[in-house]
Structure formats: C-alpha cells, structure tokens
Image (tube, rainbow, N blue to C red; front, side, top):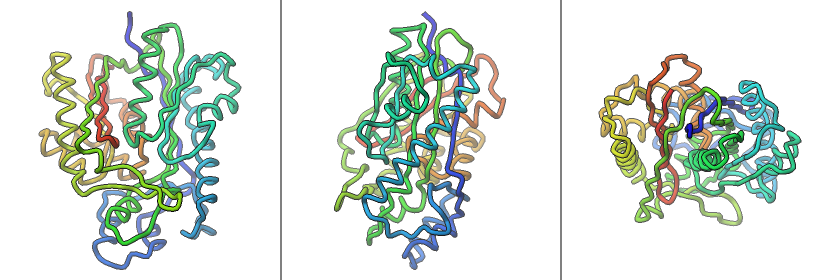
Amino acid sequence: MPNPRIIALGTANPTTSFSQEELLALTPYTDRDRQGFFLNSGIEHRHLYLDKATFRPTETTDELIARSRKGSIEIGCQAIQRALDQAGCSAQEIDFIATTTCTVRLCPNLDAYFVREFKMKEGIQRVHVGDMGCASAMIALQQAYNHLLAFPDHRALIVSAEICSATYYFDDSLETAVANAIFADGAAAAILASDRGGVEVIGHMSLVRSEYLELMGFTYPNGRHRILLSKEIRGVASTMIKGLTEAILDRHHLKQEEIRFWVLHSAGKGVLERAQREMGLSDADLRFSRQVLRQFGNMSSATVLFVLNELVNSGQASPGDLGVMVALGPGFCAEGALLRW
C-alpha cells in the first residue's frame, strides 16, 4: 500500500504587516530587556489581523473572541482555496478534514465552518485537534495520514488557522513579553492523497515528556488567554527535537547525514540556535525555518507548514531526498514525520 503524500500546500496571512518597532510602540514596555525581546528576535515583520488605524490594546474578552473567530475563518479559507487550486481538485472531492487551532475558541469548531464555506460533501469525516499548541498541525497531519492508510482512495485536508494576536496579555512577567514579541497570525492547509505524486509521508513519531507539562501552555485569567512560557523551554525544546530525530532515524535505519532537509518549527531564535548547536546542523539546514521566522514570526501550529511550503517552493528538493519535520507543543511534546520527495 502506498504511503500518503502531501500533494498541495496553501498558506495565508492577514494583509496587515507590522514591523517589530511598530508593535513595540503598542506595548507598555520601556525597559531594555523587554524591548530586546522584540528588537533581537530574528523577526522583521509579523502579519496580524488588526487595523493599524484603529487598534488599541484594550479589547474586551468578547472582542478578542469575535476577532479571532472572524480572522481564523477568513485566512483559513484563503489557505484552503490556494491548496485546492494547487491540487487541481474541488472541495467536494475532500473526504476527510482535520482542523486545528490553539488561539481560537469556537463551538462548533473550524472544521464545521470550512465545510459550510466550501459546500463540502455531507458525508465528510471530520476531526478537530484543539489546544495542542504549536505541535498541533503535525498531529492533524497524523490524523490525515492514518485516515488515508485506512481509506487509500480518499482525499484528506488539514488546516491550521491561528490568530495569536488575540492572545496578547500585559503584566509584569517576562514570559508574556516574550510571547507578545514573537507570535503572529497565519493559516496553512495541506491536501493529502495516496494516488498522486507529492511529498511522501513515510511515518510519524511522537515524544511526550510529561515531567515538563508545566513549562508551556495557557492560563485564562478573567477568561483571557495568558501564555505560560518557561525560560527552561529553550533547553528542553532542543533536547526533545534531537531525541525525537534520533528515534525517527533509528526506526527507519537512517543516519543523520542521509537527511537533506530539516523542516523545523520556527519556535524562536533561541530555540533554533540551541537545536542547531546540539544537532550539529548548518546554517543552510535551518535556512527555511529562519526565513519563516524572519518574515512571519511564530504563527503557532501553522508555522511548520509554512516552513515546508517554503522548502517545496524553493525547488531545491530532488526525487529521493529525505527530510525530517518536527514541531513542539505543550504537554511537553515533540511531534515529527519522515518525508521523502
């Protein structure tokens, strides 16, 4: 039985782009440390679902929820349409949809809205992967992969839509300042099939280290998102990227030198630098991850699909090339896949 393949990718962002200097000016930060989180982040621009002329960081919880709902559906639909166009198929040909977000509160969730917006078939199978942070697009990819192993003649769609700009929070902690400095809005979609050419998903692996559960996530004071982002994350994240990669390579009897491409979640400048050192990767190995971080910031779960999209669009991959794709999330977890062109 052939492995599922990613046959198309589509990404989308809000039209409004902010420089880090513009965003810093919207915050109350006057100390050098917090300003440095913005100005030394490796990020040049972030797209946010905001109106530059009217936005003030004083939104109510209801306003934040309404903005995240509208924005996620809008950019999610744009990403889906781009993926459908690239695949040359219609929305009515999709048999399975897996959606994900950790920044948007909806019930019914995004899957139901996308089914309605695209008039997908009544018998479509659905799953929503919620509250699994930056790793959740990889988990959605797992669900699509598993579905296609069971139904190889189906078409599967995964969609990540994140409005991180609806989760800003101002207090005295450094962790909220870091989050305000790096997170951004974006959506990404991928279509998978087993009977078409594309990027083959050879297999998936997960690594969950529950002893680090308290290091990352959200709390909800007065109903608002407030990020939990421990300073220990950099070290734990890079160790888990390395550990998961070694496990993937061991399972498939490969050596690190046989991997040509590294599709690593653009978690932040420090995480990428630490992972590069610990794994002995080159600047070229991380060029796509750094490019996405520089141009878009960290768009939570959508980010790793942006990195894959940049790689695919570069035209640098040749048939037979191998790649490792990894994203990190709360729990604490690393989710990965082995890819082949």
